[in-house]
Image (cartoon, rainbow, N blue to C red):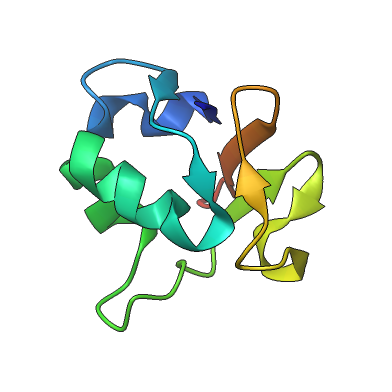
Length: 88
Protein backbone atom coordinates (compact mmCIF):
# COMPACT_ATOMS: atom_id res chain seq x y z
CA UNK A 1 0.00 0.00 0.00
CA UNK A 2 1.09 3.58 -0.55
CA UNK A 3 1.32 6.12 2.23
CA UNK A 4 1.42 9.83 1.36
CA UNK A 5 3.40 11.94 3.82
CA UNK A 6 2.98 15.62 4.57
CA UNK A 7 6.04 17.39 3.11
CA UNK A 8 7.23 18.36 6.60
CA UNK A 9 7.72 14.64 7.36
CA UNK A 10 9.92 13.76 4.39
CA UNK A 11 13.09 14.55 6.35
CA UNK A 12 12.23 11.56 8.55
CA UNK A 13 11.70 9.28 5.53
CA UNK A 14 14.93 9.76 3.56
CA UNK A 15 13.41 12.67 1.63
CA UNK A 16 10.43 10.66 0.39
CA UNK A 17 6.85 11.91 0.49
CA UNK A 18 5.47 8.49 -0.46
CA UNK A 19 6.16 5.19 1.29
CA UNK A 20 5.26 1.79 -0.07
CA UNK A 21 4.57 -0.98 2.44
CA UNK A 22 3.02 -4.43 2.26
CA UNK A 23 -0.75 -4.71 2.29
CA UNK A 24 -2.17 -5.45 5.73
CA UNK A 25 -4.73 -4.27 8.24
CA UNK A 26 -5.30 -0.96 9.98
CA UNK A 27 -3.78 -2.56 13.08
CA UNK A 28 -0.55 -3.46 11.24
CA UNK A 29 -0.18 -0.12 9.43
CA UNK A 30 1.96 1.54 12.11
CA UNK A 31 4.17 -1.54 12.42
CA UNK A 32 4.75 -1.42 8.66
CA UNK A 33 5.80 2.22 8.95
CA UNK A 34 8.14 1.33 11.82
CA UNK A 35 9.84 -1.31 9.65
CA UNK A 36 10.37 0.84 6.55
CA UNK A 37 10.92 4.27 8.14
CA UNK A 38 11.92 3.96 11.81
CA UNK A 39 12.82 7.63 12.18
CA UNK A 40 9.41 8.66 10.85
CA UNK A 41 7.75 6.24 13.26
CA UNK A 42 9.61 7.77 16.21
CA UNK A 43 8.42 11.22 15.19
CA UNK A 44 4.73 10.38 14.74
CA UNK A 45 4.30 7.89 17.61
CA UNK A 46 4.85 8.71 21.29
CA UNK A 47 6.47 6.49 23.93
CA UNK A 48 3.12 4.91 24.84
CA UNK A 49 2.55 3.80 21.23
CA UNK A 50 -0.13 6.41 20.48
CA UNK A 51 -0.15 8.75 17.50
CA UNK A 52 1.14 12.14 18.61
CA UNK A 53 -1.54 14.85 19.04
CA UNK A 54 -0.25 16.98 16.15
CA UNK A 55 -0.30 14.05 13.70
CA UNK A 56 -3.39 12.94 11.79
CA UNK A 57 -3.57 9.65 9.91
CA UNK A 58 -6.32 9.24 7.33
CA UNK A 59 -7.40 6.12 5.50
CA UNK A 60 -9.60 6.90 2.50
CA UNK A 61 -10.25 10.35 4.03
CA UNK A 62 -11.46 8.79 7.29
CA UNK A 63 -9.56 9.23 10.54
CA UNK A 64 -7.42 6.24 11.52
CA UNK A 65 -9.15 6.33 14.91
CA UNK A 66 -12.54 5.72 13.27
CA UNK A 67 -11.43 2.67 11.26
CA UNK A 68 -11.77 -0.92 12.39
CA UNK A 69 -8.40 -2.45 13.37
CA UNK A 70 -9.26 -5.52 11.28
CA UNK A 71 -10.04 -3.52 8.12
CA UNK A 72 -7.85 -4.82 5.29
CA UNK A 73 -5.76 -2.24 3.45
CA UNK A 74 -4.41 -2.71 -0.05
CA UNK A 75 -2.78 -0.69 -2.82
CA UNK A 76 -6.24 0.72 -3.66
CA UNK A 77 -6.54 2.50 -0.30
CA UNK A 78 -5.40 6.09 0.17
CA UNK A 79 -3.38 6.63 3.33
CA UNK A 80 -2.26 10.11 4.33
CA UNK A 81 -0.18 11.24 7.28
CA UNK A 82 -0.53 14.94 7.98
CA UNK A 83 1.00 17.14 10.66
CA UNK A 84 -0.32 20.35 12.11
CA UNK A 85 1.95 23.30 11.56
CA UNK A 86 2.84 25.00 14.81
CA UNK A 87 4.91 28.01 15.66
CA UNK A 88 4.58 31.71 15.76
